[in-house]
Image (tube, rainbow, N blue to C red; front, side):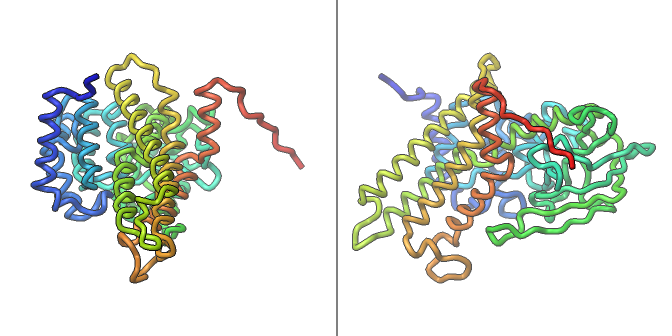
Length: 398
């Protein structure tokens, strides 16, 4: 049985390997938008077709035809050498694909290129103190006043708001419409007068979340994606991309390779952890789950390209599967390091600048953020498997 991809793809793999050999030393450690090193690396990746691969050239992308095998080869080779896959963030992984599908030509021209090159950093204005899992209950409102929307309200758990240039924001524009039908999707600058940002320190010890308050914030009328009152459709499209981007399989593979390196160097009583059967068994179980996640990603990408496959259930499991796997993977690395795995902050024995401990806590948060695991299980059971809906009880009135 010949499982090779064929000569065309093997030649492409060699091209990718050659690129990594020549330019891999320029790969930055972080993948979030921001910083000259990240932007320069992103520019090089786009020029070579390793990032923004299928985004049309007229919007700043490479302009290649979709090819799931080439995409898989790029991910495999980059993760094998633990090379940065390029800038990430809410603007790149979530907003850009939605603008390509639903944005006006003017919006595509204005926002996509600076976003994918890291010159424009975005945050997401979705959750509110009273509208988290039940997002459609949001109360932040926008009223049309001449040629501008006037926004008032509050958002919470707004990732990167303290460093973002723009926000894509859900607001209620039709107060008398049913809650899913009265929402609109606006884009506006975080420098707009009337915006107050209050950072929130999470359990990683860093500022990743924020509270954001809007007081008479004026947004140009045309900076709406989709039709007025139809923002829920845009929001659902974004949520689909978000849940697939929170813990991508290529990042999991790269971290898995990092764990293997740790196991080859860390020892207990003179024995390398990679030679310990108990730890090796745990490694193989996680490795199998990473491979399964990669195969599911290929299934979803194939369905998106071919358009003739029902992959809804495959898409529903991604967020649950990927975030819980990453949390377990990072925790396994901490176990591999033994007592050194408890090191944090400026401890001189810290391994890999504390990334394992940070990511362990970060993905514990992502099991909650972006739709809790409990919510994801309900979605899978009810919408994917057709099981009875969870009972809903009327609130007791005093």
